[in-house]
Image (cartoon, rainbow, N blue to C red; front, side, top):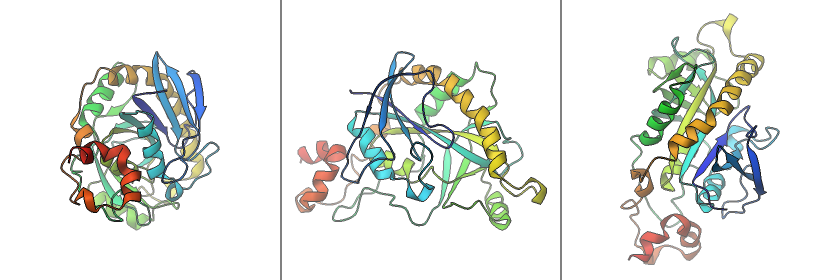
Length: 288
């Protein structure tokens, strides 16, 4: 079934409650299997592909999430817009536990993740100055405005490697960088979606204050889970309105992000790699 929308659920969001599930499918990819089976569901009349980022039952560490397979699989289903849900810690007082943030910037502090579809004989450089789709962000904010939620229209997110939480020294360093939030899963997901010419926006759910506020308020898994339960319920309730707003969007520059990005002569790209990336770039190679 072809669907324009996908939701990637983070910690605490493993299924779309209240949605009518149409089918559940396994999508093999050239990059292995995605995190789990992909559910196609009806949410307020919109067909949505749902993928739990960590797998059902939360089986995958942030570093183990097969992001290349996840994005390829969603693209193969016809997805154009991805709503990424992610639990994050706050680095600034004004971003309180229970708040939502529609992030506009990100800082990459990961070290050991496959973060590009390029390489192995094909060179490409895609613009990433605005890592999250501005059109999606506006639509999401408009959909959330009538709800009784505290929603911040922007924020800079640090993506760390994990799986341990930050040291206090790291937390203070990121505050000096004027970062607002910290999490473990937003990359390479956003980079890969841009290379795949898909719109992606993140709804970050603040669960804690990281560890910069002092030992008595250091982050604990118990604290995270308690706040996460409330945040997840709000996301479930807001999802129909968000998808309805996204459905009104037209074309977007994200859908043409790689138009002039590939530097390698198509005739010199190894056949196997060209075959793996034809889903994304075949339209450009055919035009040669």
